[in-house]
Image (cartoon, rainbow, N blue to C red; front, side, top):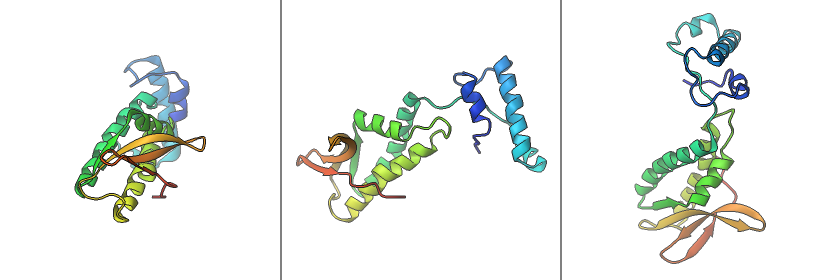
Length: 168
């Protein structure tokens, strides 16, 4: 289970990575987080928590790595339908930026991938735009002054624009 209780304090304390045990900032952060926990949750619930780990918000670099991890899951699911999916560095960075919110961790990134990659690719697969055996490259293109995701098929040089994201 994760919670964003105390996120504001950890973000403004300037801590980087996991807080070091015994560190003054770590003790202050733990005290503030404990106070927030007591204000938010009933004692019976808090008593069932084995351990509280305090960490700082994710960086954009870490978000790019998470894009790779989550794209691997998407790749695996689409592979079941015979579709190969690759992502360019530009698309990875675009998704990391779209899904970046230091206060909420990787959750917005998961929703961004669903909205901008999974759902549009699923619709295109179901509508017959992509077929089993196709390779699709997810990239970013400038269209009408706005960066958008596009789906390229390298075998026939077809570019399929990712239309309005599908709400998941």
